[in-house]
Image 1 (cartoon, rainbow, N blue to C red):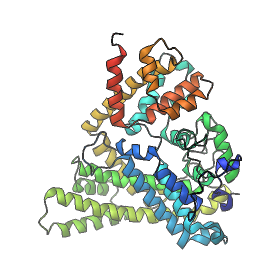
Image 2: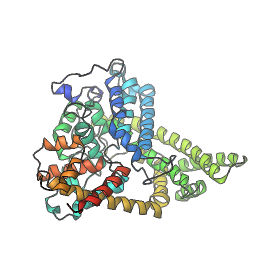
Image 3: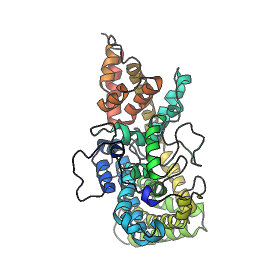
Length: 456
């Protein structure tokens, strides 16, 4: 049986292992609130501004990047946290909810995990993950490569980043609380484990096995069991992905507001939620038509009203399903692979919106062209960096020495403290690629390409 006393544990791994507070800067904030602040001010957050959400290398500033997506997921998660803490406190958190400080700690924890959930994603979005996987599968030494890399995933890289790579002043990464770390884990299993809890992916690299063991021990969790608040974070990601990506697809001019309304209606004309959202959005659209708006303005403002209505009903639905199922989450009887949105009355709205995004956005020829470019940049960059990593201790190779010296000092420090096995070398390669922004990757790729075969 899980308990909120453990799930909201505000201890940090550094303190658990005997370390102390170094700056004394936490006055006036709870530890969960400090977690959000640590994430917000970290360098990986800033790098998300130059990473793809849907549309690679986008020049239109109003189209979302991975950073704006993360802020929106964080906002939605915090909103649900506020509702849980203020409107459903006793039902969800029990009679000790005041002592647990849920009114401050739950919204801030959810805001933190929402903000951090995509930190480990490589350049060019999910196509970047695929490119990394393909490079390892296609490489000549593929038989030696671990599943951590052939099935590389940004979620596991996020956990590695905040616990190991983004160094403050020691080996504990951002040294987040164990409660926040547990809430961040979407897929609670170690790569290669037989216990995935019904979820579709692994979520922890083998290299972080000792860290996740710490986290599970001090939060009362175990492999295959999600932190209840991770369900909320996942739902908010689904809401943002389905609804807000549709808004950007229309903003790009790949489809119109009317295309979306027709698509949703044709998906299921008898679904009450879809009918309500479409009728509300169309009603606002009819009002806006009476003003002297251009077609682009009419599209934009109508999509905004669709977004407001759709997010409102989906947040309500996710909150209700969470409250209805909290006892099952806490006592371990929740069905494997359970998701809030999938089990809500908004399931069809979410599914239809994602299919619209895929058809009109992700599958647009220009998006596919740019993703192919990104795929090639990543694979070529990995091949050049692999030469450097594989030969990192051979000073007679100038290109390799130069390329290796360009890798982040944080990442090299972690690598140099390892045994420098094949696994460690592959991991350094993934750390380096995942830490790059898209413009930096292209710039560095072109620089190294010009030097790779230059006369010496």
